[in-house]
Length: 347
Image (cartoon, rainbow, N blue to C red; front, top):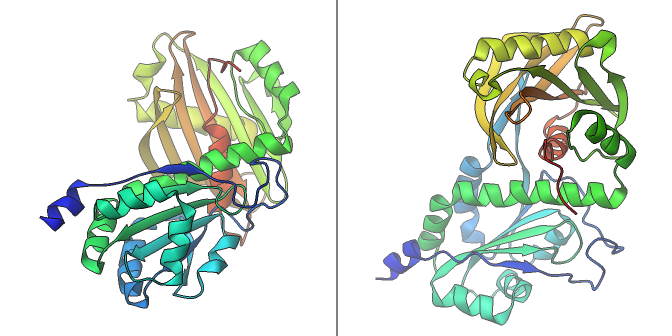
């Protein structure tokens, strides 16, 4: 009966907390580190093998040209060291209910008494806590009464927990971009001229606009070099072209030639479905090499149809950062890309 309750019950609670009393966007205290850093807090040292197995499944790898990188860089903290997690943007608490340790007590304080009661009454579950100690922070608590049932919850919700962190990362990156300031003049200009909406961080400046009449534009920032580019085609049925990979590759190849001075490498291509503001799209990941200097890197691009106006867009993300990890640069640019729309959001 207990196992049926455990497998049939999953509690997910979203709690908006400002633990230090600061305004959620203007507080002095902001979580440090990157959105890929992850503190894994164990209420019981015996949970370490279980945590390791879970992270091996949850922490997917991305390959950038030839170098694989994981989505997250986890640090593990056993009993008595949970407070070190306060400095991370992401923290995962694995709690055995009833062990009475500091980590369990800390997890209990993160949520309301009602949420904790529902968690314990159901035999375990998952609780998401937003901005617990500082802004731009997420804690996910996974709790159960014993190691086996805790492992069962983790195994059944691996993708869900990964998405909790990644979806929240995107939301927090966009929150921070808005707080730091957007390039609203450029955003308005693109809407007025092309009917496209994109939340452009202030540090991205227009580098190219329809060079030699090519229908495309490029936004750039440095430190290291990152580019967000957009090209478009006029088509009678842009959605139908999503199924023709040769046409999509040719569109991206031409963008690379016209805007980037690069060639793309077909053997590196990875295709996947995507969605933008409810519009079915296609994602292509791959590698590029420059035709103007000795170097290259990785790109992600999205093919997004606009049936209402008969257009197909290629939205491209590109990084040139030799010797540096790439995942966090792409994570931030991907958050920006997620705001793309041909329908302007209403305030």
